[in-house]
Image 1 (spheres, rainbow, N blue to C red):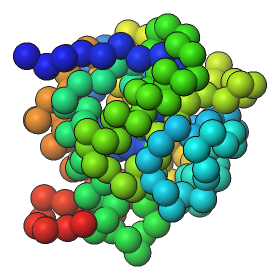
Image 2 (image 1 turned 45 degrees about the horizontal axis):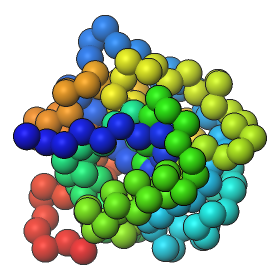
Image 3 (image 1 turned 90 degrees about the vertical axis):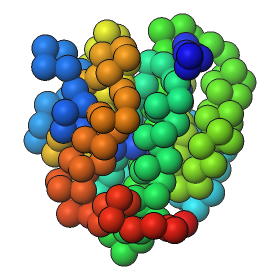
Image 4 (image 1 turned 60 degrees about the vertical axis):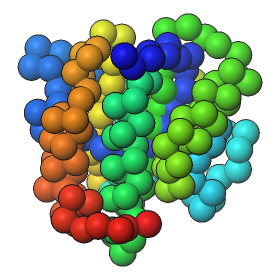
Length: 204
């Protein structure tokens, strides 16, 4: 049985899904919406993203003028870790596209910053992902109300180009599994014109 970990407001970069959403569940900005500045603080992950741990910045510094897969998660389990691994592999084999990803773990309880940082650190350690940034909301919380995340969605996944939403999916608790992970990857490959990690082996 997978262990489910409830998180405080924490974030990380990832991909969107085709079959992965719940038909009657909506979360996040609509397709074609362009995200305004969203305050983040880096906790862990990608050492080459130009941000340092503890630094507060606008998310445009990570995804602006780039293809991006972004995940906002209310909870974390083994399937989320598996999705992060897939995205990390996708970034590796699509180096020339400047694909970016951050994971946002957005829980119901406002845990202290040091607890966010520990959860982010463990997530990266467990996945061994090196190309995904893990962040939490900045102190000013700029942009967060406009994001309109649905608390009933365990995950909100955005596939974007230049901070503009191309595909948006909301996943109810328990809906992330190997099948929906494959659907998310396929959707990202199609919308962002990427090489699929399923089509290669031994990528790093």
